Image (cartoon, rainbow, N blue to C red; front, side, top):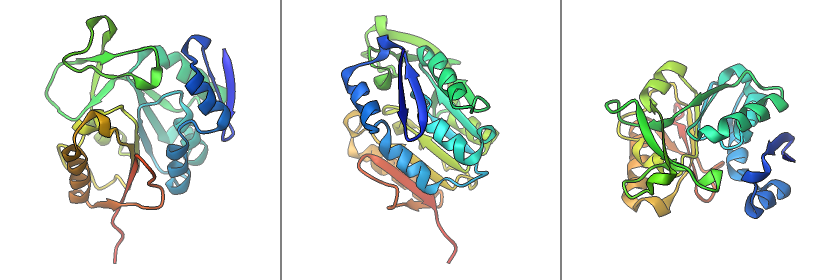
Length: 226
């Protein structure tokens, strides 16, 4: 079991999941650095957070330290990561974070379970495409974004879902969402998908937030009153 400290957060993962790339990111402090910067810049005590794509539990832990573990819900589709995330949350005394298992979609209608493609690198796992090799595809619970937004009423939504964000902006977002922070994956979809994401959030009363945005990290915030 490899153990690291990033931004004051204690993280560990099994040796079998460790690669040179992830080791370098954890040692240098570059692991999810832009996402962490955005969360630290905008999150305030008491705000409710919904994170889509838990990874190692790093961002959820950072958020819990600011807003309280009881205000953080994090979702992970890869079942192999669940015990790793739970252990990291406990390691940092934020086991009160709500951890959900499932892949998030935008459509309300559909099957209860959805194909999810795993791989040798945990950070690259994603909802299965039609041409995915069947040996690498498992079926996990399907969670509808609208249901999650209605149930947990987050003020802040953070997501890194390896391209699935393309399908999460087919309906207006509710007014209680004050800020959205996401990693875009332009290699997985055309420019029109990014335009649709921005247009949906703009129509929902949010605008580009230049401060925490950086590289592929797109941040949007609720329009301020004049």
